[in-house]
Image (tube, rainbow over all chains, first blue to last red; front, top):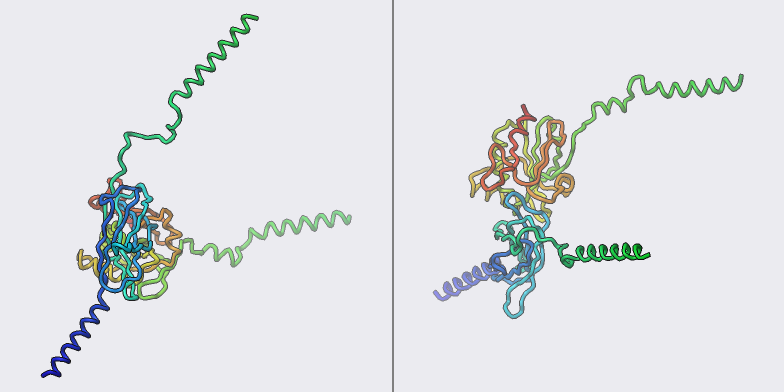
Length: 166
Length: 189
C-alpha cells in the first residue's frame, strides 16, 4: 500500500513538473495613456507569468479600417527591476492610422511563444487641440510685413522731399 | 575609276545591310512575336513547392498580399471567398501570399483553421509565402491587404492597397471603396 502511495506521488509530481515546464506563458498588457492618440508616444507595460522568462518582445502594427502598415515595431521590452514588469515606450508614426494591433513574443524556458494569433487591438484618438488649419510657418512676427511697407513709404517720401528741396 | 568602284561597293554594302531587316524575320524575331508579355513572380506554396504566375496563364489571377495579424485582411478574405465561388476555376484563380517574413506556413494554416472555426468560411484557394520579391514588386505603399489582378496573359490590370469589395462595399468601409465585380467581369466575359 505504501509503495503504491509513493509511486502515485512520484507520478503526480512528475506530471505536475512537466506541466509547469511546458506551460505557455501568459501576459497582461496595459497602455499608458489608456486611450492613445495618433502619432503619440505610448508606454506598454506587460505582466508576464509562467516559466522562466528570458526575453519579451513587443510587436505593434498601425492600421486603418481598410489597411495596415507593414512596417511597425518589433522591440525588446525592458524588465523593471522593482515591479518585475516589462516596459517599452513606442512613438507611433502614421497619421492616417486609427487603431493599433499589438502582441507579445515571449521566450520562456528557452522556447519562443508568439501570441500573434491572439493580437490585441486599440483604437487611436485623433490628435486634438487645434482649431482649423494651424500653420507652422505662423511663427513670424505678426504685422512684420506692414512695418516694412510703412518704412518703405517713409523712405520714398523722404527721397521725394529731398528732390523738391533741391 | 577606282574611286567609283569603292563608292559603289560602300553603297552596295550599305543597301544590303539596310534591306536585310526587310526580309524574312530571323529566329530571334519569331521568338519575340510569340514572347510571353505578361508579368511573372514566384512564391512558395504551403506544400513547399515553388509556383509562379506563369503557371496560371489563360486565367485571371487575383493576387492578395496579406499577413495573419492584419485585421482588414480578414475582411478582404471574406470578399475573396465570394469571388472564388462566383467564377469557374477555368477562368480565375486567387493566390493569397503572406508577405510577413516572420510568419511561417504553420501560422498560415493556423489562421485558416481559426478563420473556418470563427466564420464558417473555408479559405480553399491557393495560399503561399512570399520570398520578398512579390511585396517589393507590387506592394509599393507598404500597406496590406494589397490586391493585384492579372489578365489571362499575365499582364497587370489592376492594383490597389486596402480592402476592396466584390459586389457590395463591406460594412464599416468608406463609400469610395473599390468594387471588383466590374473589373473581373470585364476581364472574364
